[in-house]
Image (cartoon, rainbow, N blue to C red; front, side, top):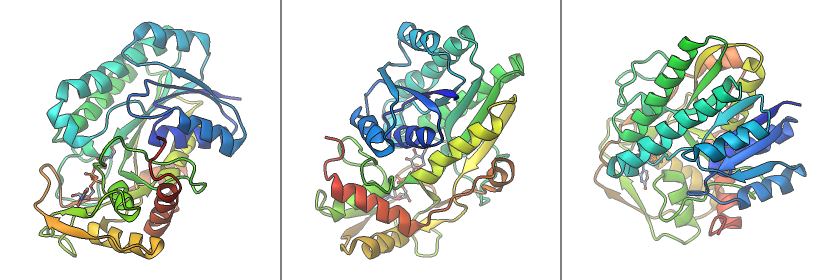
Length: 337
Ligand code: WQD
């Protein structure tokens, strides 16, 4: 039985990954500072899987507590989700993002070295690419992040690369997520943003459930099929399973690997609205607003490398993403509150 430390384990993606790890018979030690999530998510993961996991409230900026967990549990690998991820907020509070995302990772790597743990799967992001002309995005695209969030993820990738160059017995996998959406089919765990959602699908779901009056569409004058922004939305369960595949195919060896985790398909805002209306039977009222600063027109992945080397490919389509997002939202109108 392999034992995995999951940082950010109570979060949206972290909790879904803990569930998939338990189903794949891993032992899970989850840590989180609970600044943007609730331990309730892991209570529900235990219910769904009928398996137990260990949770400790730990902040990556608390080196002592972090080292205690790593020295107490002899983990075989770390999956590192913990971090702040709101693009807009990162522009307003850059230092908070660099401390949490970069210094937090430095503390984690130091504790891993102290406890001789040399395998890490890192939750990176397509935002490291920044605005690119050529689509779909491949892993060897030049990295030109255009906001502090994307730069913090790029910086962590560089740090992990330097660690690998220092000691090539490390085993490092960088997973660049595109747009994670949806929820586990049980409707028991899902995305529970604090306050008004920044991202499209949770916002649409809250309009559908009556928590918000209408969606603001940020621009309908982009050079796309219908003028609205196009993104590569990926079901959070597909994304989580990509982590299991990364562990299983890379946990025994050593090396430095980078993979895009997306579907390879673009979907516009209007297409997402139509899909959500179809699966929920609800009308999504919206108004067209100005473009949101920092938004690009089109962003979607080339994920062939993950398919070839990890044997992973996304399975779920937009309607399934909307269906599961709606199931979660309608069963939990106030998230985990
Ligand atoms: C999607 C589209 C908006 C909200 C996200 C995460 C980021 C990263 C990548 C992991 C855009 C439009 C949105 C709204 C709208 N994920 N939109 N009205 O900006 O691609 O970034 O995925 O690292 O962390 O933030 O996602 O859902 O905010 O926007 O019209 O109320 O929907 O303009 O075209 P984005 P998003």
